[in-house]
Amino acid sequence: MEAKLTRRAEYTFLDNLKRGRHRWLRLTPAYSARLVAERLQHYPSSTRVLDPFGGTGTTALLAAQMGYPATLVEINPFLVWLSRAKTRIYTPDAIQSALEWGQMLVHKRRDYTHGACEPPPIRDIQRWWDAESLAWLTTMRTAIHATQATVAQASVDLVWVAFAQCVIEFSNASYHHPSLSFRQNRQLALDMHSHDQRFLEYLHETARDAHSNPCLEPCVIEADARTLTPLDGNTYDLVITSPPYANRISYIRELRPYMYWLGFLTDGAEAGELDWRAIGGTWGVATSRLKLWQPQLPIPASVADIASRIRAAHPTNGVLMANYVVKYFEDMRLHIQRLTKLLASDATIHYIVGNSSFYGVLVPVEQILAEFFAEQGFGSVEVVPLRKRNCKKELREFEIIGRL
Ligand SMILES: C[S@@+](CC[C@H](N)C(=O)[O-])C[C@H]1O[C@@H](n2cnc3c(N)ncnc32)[C@H](O)[C@@H]1O
Image 1 (cartoon, rainbow, N blue to C red):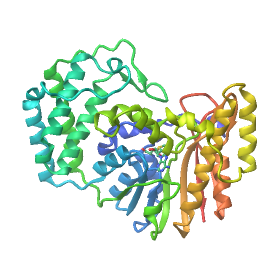
Image 2 (cartoon, rainbow, N blue to C red):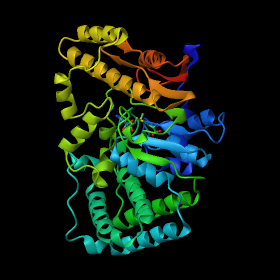
Image 3 (cartoon, helix red, strand yellow):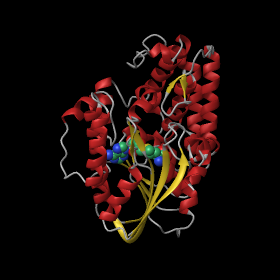
Image 4 (tube, protein in one colour):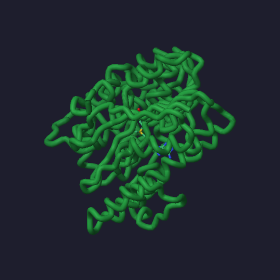
């Protein structure tokens, strides 16, 4: 069975590129709206949907478009902002005023050349953007900041979404790797006029998508999936989500160009702090803290076994990576314990997860999380292979389907 598993691009972010608001901002580890739709369609419209690792808001937006009441939890404030912008019901007036303001920004942008704010402190920034693009981004950002108080928040958000698209489109970023890297020998060479035109094109596309409103607005909450405190008193029937994988991919690292330009990050220390708070985070200060980290809960036998094999597999980094894996599973166990308390007695969960590997030791994330769900009283827990990943050949994505 597994031998036939393919990459199934229809379940990845690539499928979102033709789906209106779902393509607003690229996060490579996002799944597709189609994956969510295939699961949701089997449930009645009163089903209360929860995504505790909301990311770019795929589940919440799709659920809202299909008329389901949905709640999204996410720890990254930038993704919370984005999910709110993506799932909002926009009035025609708000959209029109975003378009008019965007036009004004293009006319007035040059007035902000002197006194334009510095580019953000992204390391090796000249590898990311050529001089023309950097000048355009800094003046446009200054112009948006200087005039946004005159426009309603909904319109402001649409303009920032278009600006965020420019941040990445004008850059050298390449998505041909599992994580963000640079294109080789890219010649963008847009002049300022073309930058302005591109911005207006993105704004018009964003405005067109904004006209297509969801049936209702989901609830988007900035919170930690290990505690889920703001959800106290609520009950959910269905969870469709994709938690971080135990593969050291840092969402802050992936999102840093957007987060810096849109003001959600001001320096590297802050980036490391945010990554330390996220499950599976491992960037900057997160790595040095991991060296000293001690488990709070007893380590389950399955996790202890994997950790000891990783420790033995590499003379210098084995201990750190073993700690990483133990912490990842402790965090996910805390999440599953907490989540279960918020579920209706007949609730169902769909968790899309990837396995991972350290120094040749395969970490069966899907099996261990399935074990945690069973431990919490899920009567039926099934693990279904979903797709191959684009990296090492032993890496797969799975769906854990659990019923209480
Ligand atoms: C695989 S991504 C989810 C992608 C999402 N399905 C989508 O389509 O965009 C996992 C998300 O979990 C978030 N996350 C990590 N730790 C968290 C925590 N403790 N609480 C809530 N969210 C967290 C990350 O910021 C990331 O956005």
